[in-house]
Amino acid sequence: LMLSFGFNFDVVSDRRDLAGRTGWSTIVKNPWENSFDHIVYSLLPMGMTSLSCLYFSLLLWRYGSEFSMIVYPSTINPWIYTLLGSIIMLVGQFPGPQWFPLASNAGILVYLWTMLRLLHEVRNDMLQAGDLGEFLHAIGSDQVSNVMEESERASTTNNKEDTEAPSTPYQIT
Image 1 (cartoon, rainbow, N blue to C red):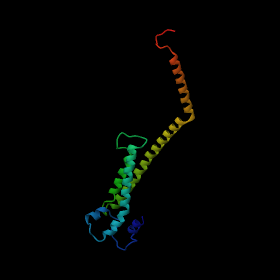
Image 2 (image 1 turned 135 degrees about the vertical axis):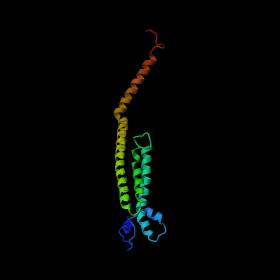
Image 3 (image 1 turned 30 degrees about the vertical axis):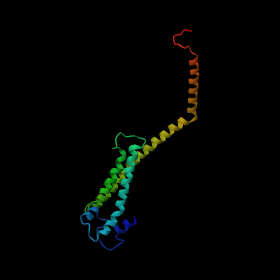
Image 4 (image 1 turned 180 degrees about the vertical axis):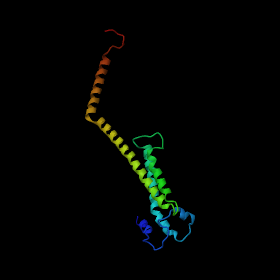
């Protein structure tokens, strides 16, 4: 964060270059210019943030596809939103000086919107887990245990009557 502030607000040096005003495409097109060290240092914080968001969105997508309480039939499910948002945020760091301010901020905005959308899925997943917890608690409570014990007693008394019953079903008594 401090690195980003230092280069974007020209605190580190007095040179007026494209640091904080252009993306990775400027470095890719002309990789060996002397003033690009400031550009690289200004892009590193957001680049690392974008990569970490991409990694965590892959983890969230995997959770939603394999372990969540609501199972979707395909891997294209609502848990993929943050993956798409982080890819858009990463792509927004690439344009040159003309489009960088718009693309960078739009990519961050789209990522934040997809994160808010995913929070809705997380909330639904937590509600489903809570419902499951209440159900399991009800199964383990004494009221259900008493019902189970009564049904077991009834089945054992029926078994005793069945053993005392005639050996053939057609025997008239």
